[in-house]
Amino acid sequence: MRPNIHVILALIFLFFALLQLNDPDPYIWIPIYSAVAAVCLLNSQKKYYPPLILAIMGGLSIYWMSYMPHFIDWIQSEMPSIVGTMKAETPFVEFIREFFGLLLAILTLAYELRVANKAGLN
Image (cartoon, rainbow, N blue to C red; front, side, top):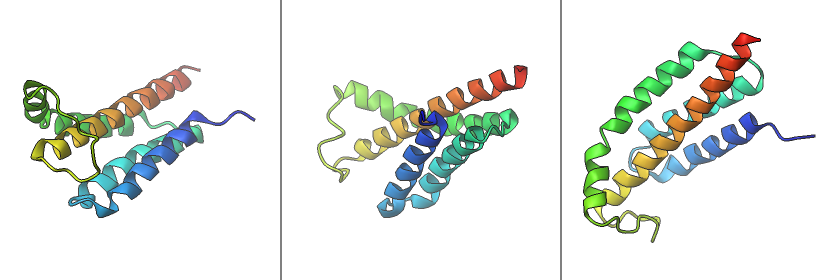
């Protein structure tokens, strides 16, 4: 039996949500990662809701763009490591990690939207 990619993605994002329990702002990140996981689980059950996926993607994209100045600062600082320790020792480390977390969420939702749209054509 081949593993379902939607279930695998859901488990990954649920794991990301659990990692946020010790984050300074879990009330932001747990719902974000849980929403992505929920979309993946819905798609795994062939329950497709493109408007919901688009709404979540839109909100996350706007939030992601708010991190762009931090991302530009990080690039201009010659992209110092953001993976040295789990503790964010400089302010931009947390921002860059969150920037990439949002990007992963948006890309995953884009994939799930593509699947949902293809399924709607059948």
